[in-house]
Each structure stands twice: as C-alpha cells, then as structure tokens.
Length: 366
Image 1: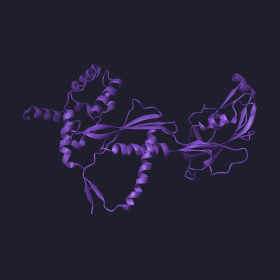
Image 2: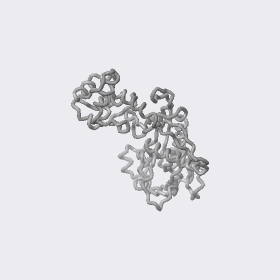
Image 3: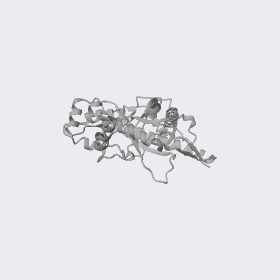
Image 4: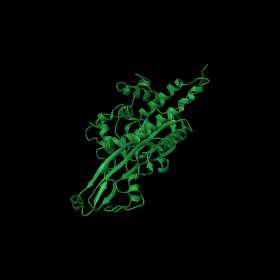
C-alpha cells in the first residue's frame, strides 16, 4: 500500500548565468528546494565532480637515450625531473572511439621527434618542444598544444613513447599497476580529473509568502577537457546511478502530493506579478522607451515575448535585453515563459491582466 507524502517544492529548470560563462567556468542557479536540500544536493554534486569524472592523462614517458628521471640529457636545457613535471600539465581529451575500445584501455603513442639545426636557428638558438610536437597525429585532442615539454639546443632525432589512459582523480606513479614498464620507461603521477574547482552556496528564496526555501548556486571551473555544463551533466548521472541501488529495498512506494490544491493561489501570485507596469520595475530610460514604442505596458505582455523577437524592436540591443532578463529573474520570471498551466497565453494576457486589475480595484467586469 503506498504511503502519501506532502508536496516537495522542486526546481523546474536550471538557470545558467550567461554573463559570467566562459569555456571553463559557469555559474548555475537552481531553485527552489525545500529547506536543507540545497546543501544535500550541492555537496553531493561537488564531491562527484571533483572525484569521479574521467579524462585522459599521461601515465609514463620513455625518451630514447634517457634511462631515468634523475639526469640531464645532452642538448636539452631542462633535466628529466622538469620534463616529467611538464608532462603532468598536459591537457588532452579522447576523441570519439568505437564501441570496441574500453574506456580504460592504455594506448601507446610513439613519436619520432626530430629537431633540426634549421629549426633551432629560426627559434633564436633554442627550440621549444611542445605538446603538439608529441601528440599531433594521435587519437587525442590537445587542449593546450603550446604547453612546453622541454627546450632543445642541439639537433636531435629521438623516439618518444607516451602511455595514455583515462582515469579518475589524481593517481601517484606508484599506483599505476595496470601495466609493466619497459626498460628506461619513467612512470609519472597522473592528474585525471578535468574539474579544478567547485564552489556551492545556499541562499534563501521565496515561494509564495514563504522565504525559507533554498536557492542553490554552483560555480564550476574545469581545465578545458570538458565544459562546466558537461561536468554537471555527468556528475548528476553518476549520482542517480548510485542511488538506484536503494530502490531494491523499497518496502512501500511513496506517492507525493503534487500540490493541486495550491494551483489557484499560485495562479493569483503569478498574475499579480504579470500585472505590474513596466515603469514599476525600475528599468533604464532607454529600455523603458523601447518597450513603450513596442506597445508593451505590463510585465505579462513582456514575459510572453521570446528573446529573438525582443531583439527585433527598434533601438533594442543586447544590453537592454540583459537588463530586462535580470529584472525578470528577480521576480522569478523569464522571457518566453510558458504560462499554459495557468491558462495564460499570448492571446489572452492583456485581458487577464485587465480583469485582475479591475477585480483588485473593485470594478465589475464588463
């Protein structure tokens, strides 16, 4: 027999802060959560992103004529200790492989590295050997191709072998036990994790008249091998997979109240926001004039407009669009909003707002 639980406030979507977004950083805003669930979800996602996401890294290096890492090589400015440290900073991403490749397969990449006298002269007496010189024709995409490996001062023709595999977290060299090193092969520490930093904050947010719900803010910084959006997507799927096992001990199923009894109250609260005049949300003069010229008088008429249509208005640019989106976000609204569950659409929004204002003023509908 199912057990009935009361309604849980749940976020309907995740907002991405586009103003601060880069290829390696993103801020996500998720609300509303029931009190306490902001920390529960935020902490879990943070731990998964930092420890459980996979990416390729170099496991070992073998450079012809260099038997161990505690020596200097003729014609190379750096000794092998620094070369190993530089290799640890390689950022590589595995290109799409066929189904016959296991994600943890170790791949050996071999390169005949040739540095000529002409290359050295063109570089002013020393040639910078970078990551792209070693991995230019491999199955991996290089995120930092100009990353320095070592500096050559004499012509050379050496074979360089790199072992590469995918893994999780940070693995010291002594824990690489899944292959047998050959003679002169130097096993190195591997930084697999593509996520560098994850911060999360929990703030209060409003639902109706209550202000003690949670707003979760996640700030994700990656090293470029995956995007912050991919990091959040992968971590959520990993978390869901680990929770599924607890479904096997289900003694009773739980039926959650969907909150239908609050629909009318929610509708009234939404319409109260939609009935606000444009001049009540303190927009700049330029934005206010643009909306006035487009015959948009209320917030309701504004939110049913998609972004693409807003940009077609005369003298309306991205700066005004950003300002309006920020103001709407403060109200819990957005452009192109789907209000169909309240029976509101673009065709009837003016009439619904007019009826609401008439009722509020005590004027009977005509």
